[in-house]
Length: 448
Image (spheres, rainbow, N blue to C red):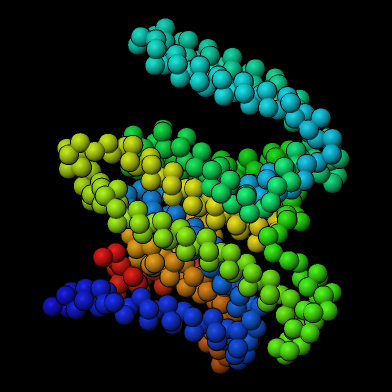
């Protein structure tokens, strides 16, 4: 009987509106109340919301892979990072002298590497099985690798030596930054195709291992290949799709507008910029949800769920399980890559050292599980809620530890407890996850 009551509660049509209303109240309190628990700043509230919306797009991509098809992607951080490369290569202006120094040779080396892989694939498919095929395949790959490096290394050295103190990278195309968002999705989709072609035909656990490895490889490449995005030197001043605060503050009309609402010019300019970002992110998120919902309710979506629930039965009905898995894996990774491009645009900074699995893989999975895997709106709810808690626990944690240790005498024990306050984030995430799995195992908004 208790299981039936839980199921009825989970399927209630009022559940989603109530939960989203509670979430909205939290952001309103963050913007209006200043009492120690909340900041009382609309700038802070909107900043949390904007990153929450980007996290919702990340969670939506993971939900497509796990909730639709049961594919475990443990390398979310890698697809996010490769998507974040798009604003650098698309929106930044070209670096003067970099293309002349090594651009043509760089393209030639990439063509040689691609040609070697294509030739190796042709050898594998066209030659008869046997030792000779293996020897020819190895010879093609080794020769292609050395030829690639012979052209690639001098090109990279020349590019990194060009204005190395300020640039040292190839630069971009100088195109509008909004174009970088879908391009970031294409970058991630290409990486997902390569991983999926190798891993999806094997056992399901191999995909988790492969994505974990490729995620770390992508981040390592971005950290070390300075010609691409300056590596750990980072790239700042990435163009924006919204106005700059300083431009608004110098505008007399905006100064009058800020005064009419009772804000200082500096505060109003920050709010205005964050509202502009929020509208852009909402448009992208709602469009993705619309497409995802249409796909989920289509024959394709029903087929994906059938494959997820019973691969053997689906294969017996004539469905190409591997091809469909590859399809949804590419789509989900493209959504994650688009979120990565949006995040770099919001920050105005490409910092490969900041891509850590704890934040960009584990936390995204917590968002999907808490929200409800298989439910697109559940992923959005879980992402925004978990991100809000993740940010606020940084403030609430020390306050809670200080309250609990208030009666303890000064000493090493009290100092140790106060010093452990920053770790409250991880304890809180684990506690939230345990509570949700105990009382709502299918998430706050479970799949119907």
